[in-house]
Amino acid sequence: MAPGAQPERPQMVQGSVPWPDLADALGRYRPLFGEVVDDWDGFIDSLRGPLATCLWTRSGRTDGAALQALLAEQGVPSTPVPWLAGAPGTALTLPPGFKAGQHWWYCAGLAHAQEAVSQLPVLLLDLAPGQRVLDLCAAPGGKTAQIALSLGNRGTLLANDFAMDRIAALQGNLDRLGVVNVTTTRWDGGNFPVAAGPFDRILVDAPCSSEGTLRRNPGLVSKLGPERSTRMAGRQRALLRKAVKLCRPGGRILYSTCTFAPEENELVVADVLAEQDGRLRLLPLTLPGLGTGPGVTHWAGRTLPQTLAGCLRIWPHHNDTGGFFIAVLEKDTAAPGVPAGEPLPLELEPDDAAWCHALAEHYGIAEPITEQFRAHRQTRRGLHLAARDHAPPAAPLPEGSGLFFHRTNIRPPKLTTAGALLLGPQATRQVLDLDAPDLRDAYLRRQTLTPTAAQRAYCRPGQVIVRHRGFPLGVAVLHRSGELESLFPRKWSGCTAAG
Ligand SMILES: C[S@@+](CC[C@H](N)C(=O)[O-])C[C@H]1O[C@@H](n2cnc3c(N)ncnc32)[C@H](O)[C@@H]1O
Figure 1: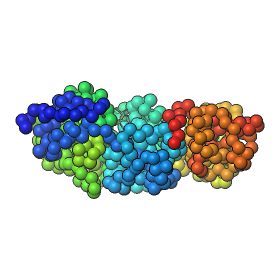
Figure 2: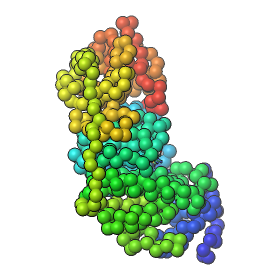
Figure 3: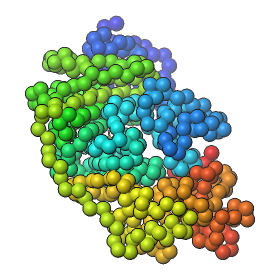
Figure 4: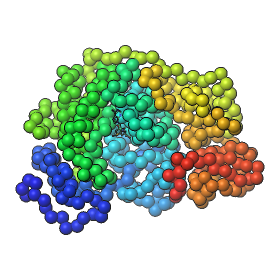
């Protein structure tokens, strides 16, 4: 078939982008087919098909087999993803369109929905507990949570993003998943203060033209084009340059995008490598069990060094996924680093330890909260918990450090929902187990209900932690009348259709 000619496609998948529109929008990549990748028709076809839902289990709370059993009870088939076996938690694929966020186990932080290919960068970041890590473009935080858990929920991970509303979404995910080793910052990553460094690992999951997400966002098709990619590339270069500066000598940077455009991928990496003049090298990547393609080395009249073939491309038609690009860079041990900056003081005020003790006493938590975590006060509203060895920098000023667990500026003070999910497994009193109908029809909908005497057995009137099948979901007030008033947060009530 002549380049640019459109084959006839008799059937269109409902809701997907018409074949000719897609082939037009991505037609500039046609020359790569036959050179670095096969099957142009298969590529375009794959972008028109629905994409499987994927989620990973929150290790320490559940595992793949247990979540699969829960899903099977609901009649939902699921399969482990073999090529994500090394990632934190177990990755499962589910049917396209499955809305994980509407299920009680999602609200309880047993799992997180994240596209399969998006789970790859953390797998390739070579993480180990004790490393100091920066996630430069972090929101909404799927990868941040994966990194945090790969670090054992200890130590220091800085999660930065430019967009305030997206940082709020990120914090919501971290709270639900019980992550306590993250400090969030809101900063232009290209100008991130060097006083925050140095870092052992840096993830630059860059803002991009997102062509690889067309299966989820067909509406994007009208916005694509080289101008958009060229515009993004300036910002991407600035982000990667800053990451190189902030990385410790001998440390690693992973640069990723979910787009096909070489302008946003190999060209960005090649330019930054050239600027570093041998002080930075591209590491070869392998992913057993996953069909991947090499990086592009000829594009738009430019020939890149052959080493750029060591970048990793994931094409949607090879594994029935979205599209993705990954490059891992290692900074030479002799390259210049940045000095460690001042740490941020994370402290309790004089009366705050008493709040922690009273809370532990109320719920019968044996081990003092202040010994388990680095409890501290960031705001007048109440107290946060961070990992004991969490040591964020003083600059840039954080949006938040750790998990907000106790509201002390109201009477009576209140354990937050995130606090209930984190501390609930240790509670020995003031816990009340609800069955599925009560949970679905009342508690998650913020309705009042009347639990049975057996359900109230470990509770006196006052605040209680609500559980289902032993998993904490949040807080409620048990009134003297025997009525239970739900305090499940409105903003979490995407979780109302419990299954
Ligand atoms: C691809 S998304 C990151 C997805 C995220 N890593 C995850 O796994 O959930 C890119 C993010 O970069 C942020 N961003 C865009 N420009 C930025 C900049 N100059 N500095 C920091 N973040 C930026 C966007 O707000 C967006 O949240």
